[in-house]
Length: 322
Image 1 (tube, rainbow, N blue to C red):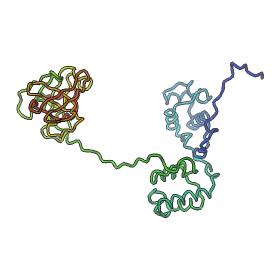
Image 2 (image 1 turned 60 degrees about the vertical axis):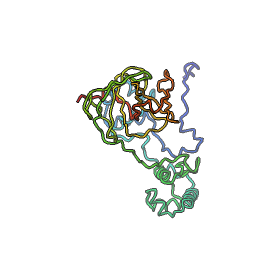
Image 3 (image 1 turned 90 degrees about the vertical axis):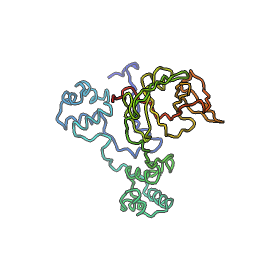
Image 4 (image 1 turned 120 degrees about the vertical axis):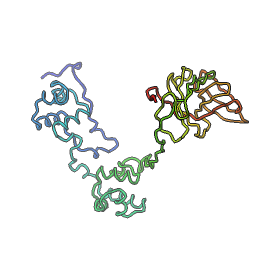
């Protein structure tokens, strides 16, 4: 057969498994070629290409292209093929002696090095890593370490799993995340009465709603530990994009306020604003605007009727009628 002209030749990219500058090839078992695995899995399940395609939601042509090597399925499709045909995924095939070439003396030296650095004997080391003692003792005799055990050692002691397996890379992982989970309670959900409507902004106004204490124009269901928390409905777009027209500001009047936090300010002349508290000095509050169209505001404490902590912004859809 004559050689194809250059314009009809197609370069096939070199397999990544053939390039191993970091000497990590031993981590991965020999893999069956994808097209062969798909064909084998389909035949073991006694399915035609059309039947397999129907189960996967693709055409017979797609399956044929996979099996001929013209295209490869996505990882999600490979998982589906594995489930449909009940065949293990190609990257989960057991390795056959893949670590047998590792130097047994070096394995024992690495394990002994870890025992020395941690100040543990084999029993304590095995217990902390949740690995059987006999397995650690076998490592000290030169038996190869599995990938799963190397990951367990990394989790327990912070040793890089690649270093544990073959003394490759840094000995210790750069960052080991093992922070204690300490969630902060948000308080029980409460029905917060909507007690007023405010047009926010430097020249905004406040409209009180004449309802008994604890009641209002509907309510917002919100988690809070402040027994006096309430909500106000916001009017206008002066606070966009932080607060949109028709949304609700959740106010916790008993919450301590720190510089840098948002506050709802109602001045004695009737203006209502949501600002960022910059600082208080000599009885004067300096407030920064969240909307850059407005400048900073300075008010003396004698000019302020209310200055309350803003706990959050509730969307329109969270409002409920009484």
